[in-house]
Length: 468
Image (cartoon, rainbow, N blue to C red):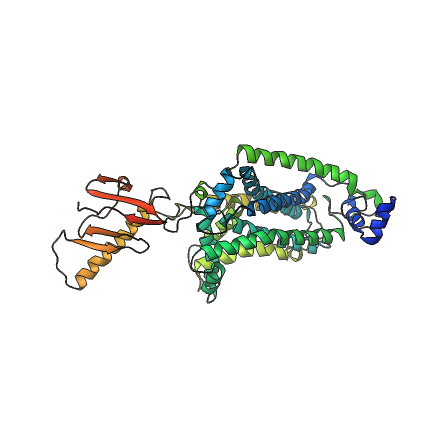
């Protein structure tokens, strides 16, 4: 009980008396979310988002368990198994969309919950432990969401895993070994997919356990309130049930309506279309961006482009990104003001709204980041990688022929193999080496003919390149 005037549990039914004596579970529920838990009477609707976060986590766990029954954690079958869930499993499309959009709803609710705590000073004493456990939950959510995004094994999944795990390679000395150890290899593949699937299945239950500690720590000092002034007696509180259970019930109803609209009308609004293309290590997407809830941190990561002092820009970006999160751990001791609520702190209120605008701008910048690429073809076009490969190979052969003093007449055909390609390409030295879009279909365009076919996940060259 958080307050001495809290009502004690007194069962009247003989069965409940016997159960309370043998296993006091009803007493625990009564004191945690029932009439035995007094709550400040002036809480507004921003206090609903803690309950909504619990509802979102429940949706994620239930739908995730069912999806795991049909998912194949194999790099050759993961993408196909997700499509099978969408097309062949009864209500599989609904479960997948609930899980996919449930993650976004979970983050929306948690972000509002965090900013509510910042505005009303809920991180201050005596609730430091409540705040610290909340930050731990947020970090676990980010890790779980990242590993879950990798599992569909689409283009964004594969290249997102490549970029995010590449952060660790920025650490001096031990970075590359840690990167290899995390992936089980030098690039995301079957080992990484299995590891991410196992951890993605485990971490939601770890989050649920930390949430129990979070609520336990909250019940010791009791809830904060919009004024930031501690309650003094029973006249300042009301029982959690039925008053706030009814208020939370209304919030859950609104949450489910928004969730249903998102699922049934805009299921892919918060996703990326490239993730419906199967992962291809030979084809880099035109731009690689994470899910929307990571955009502000991605913008911080990409903000450093110049080496400074003896530290490379990549390491500066990683340090800045993680510092922006870890700073939350020290917030209870960085803010020494005795006043909690921003309603009575004008300067702090201005700083708070500047922070909100700053996060939104960083999110927009993170969304707008695109790789500086000269290639304008679609990301799934195999000739883009082929163009680079042929050009580099041709230049190397020219340098090699010059060094060995091999004088061959212009127009001689040579065979050349390309790294990562199972076929061989025949071309002529001195020929202009560029591949038009029409060449993908095997047509001849300005003297260059090319056709390609995908077999066993590799590109086989069918026709030779002819001299212009």
